[in-house]
Length: 203
Image (cartoon, rainbow, N blue to C red; front, top):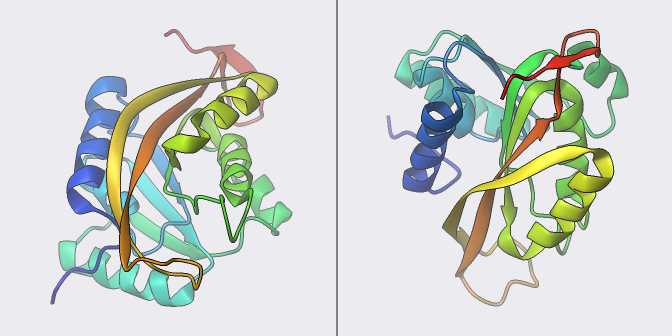
């Protein structure tokens, strides 16, 4: 069976290896993937030695493909959850401060779903204890930097990538377009434990 992915595989592979090799935020960690789609980041993190990975998505069809991909790679330390985290506050509380690392490729939120990227980011910061890695259009970097400062969160640009995205909305005039994308790392000045209390990160 052909594996079905929803992003540029080469870029995603480099991204995950960088997260693991440079920051040690995957191997042996509890990793969450918000808006996991077909499971590329979730399964990739599991293959790099994550202790456990949980992918969340609202799209049942995408999660069905994610399960097929998981079975194809014979990955066992992965679970997928069908939930809309943007409206299910009780579910967020259940996982609050539980994940060592959250990784995600959220909707960019610059046209049709304006601001949804920041909604995803806020949720990810609630769920993570140590760090969040997220892909955002490079054109939004200054805005996200300002919001990070407002929230008291450290933001750094880990890598600059280029994705080729197919047209998906009526306002898209080309069949596909290359866009510049940042891999951003968000971390807390103090590491949170599961109760929400803080202790020194030690970095």
